[in-house]
Image (cartoon, rainbow, N blue to C red):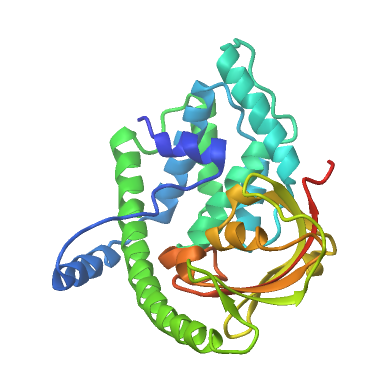
Amino acid sequence: MKNILLLTLLLFGTLTIFAAEEKETANTEKQETTKKEEVKPNMKDFSYSLGYEMYTNNKQYKLPLFPEKLLEGIDDGYANAAPKVKQDELKAQHVAFMAHMQAGEEKDFQDEKGVLSYFTGYQVGKNFSANGIDALDKDEIVAGINAAKEGKEPRLDEAGRKAAMDAMDEVVKAKAKVKAEEAKAKAEKVKVESAKFLEDNAKKEGVKVTESGLQYQVIKEGEGAKPKATDTVKVHYAGTLVDGTKFDSSYDRGEPTSFPLNRVIKGWTEGRQLMPVGSKYRFFIPSDLGYGDMGAGANIPGGAALIFDVELLEINPEK
């Protein structure tokens, strides 16, 4: 049984079955959601199927699967702990694997530290936990892996494995749909509150408003050059919601950040170009110049206006 999800999962650490788009009436959506939530997947069968199919697909692409690292990642993901794998280490392993794929090598790709296996498990655990799915049965995952590895007759045939994974898919879709409805309702409320904040804020002394709707205050005016949209800038910054909730800060991390201006939200791209080097500005960014109705991660809801205090330290800093 081919399952492109499992290959995608291991290569990129992304679970892609957590989305369902259905354009029905409100009553129909409610009925379907209720119906889907009544489906109770067998976690033992699903876990077994996950392990079996994951090993089978990895073998097809000569990508080793380290069960102990996979399970370690699942535990950390469910616990929402900081991943033990560093991003540069993950990137190096991914680059090595892609080179192996492109070369069509006969020799097995060696992931000696189990980096990809760990990170795959981490994303599985984190995504399942975030979607309210009960803990996976780790013994059954290993049993599925071993059955595929040793060529044993699987406890579940292809049809049984497909049924187990389809049942989980239905539950995940239903939960995702409920979360999407809740997020949409929250975004509408946040959008109204943010619009009112920006309306009042625009009337305050010292606040300037650009044609796009971006608002800013000059806290300190520098005397250096202003960056272009194609430049990379080095900045210190702190970001909060309009209620004062902090969601990001380079100050808290203890070091400034560098990034290309054409690869960030519109409010940042526009705002930084207003600043001479050495300046410190406060920006008030409407949601359509920020992360829009989708929001970003767990800390920035859809429809949220954003406030950033930014110091522009350098343009095109030397690496």
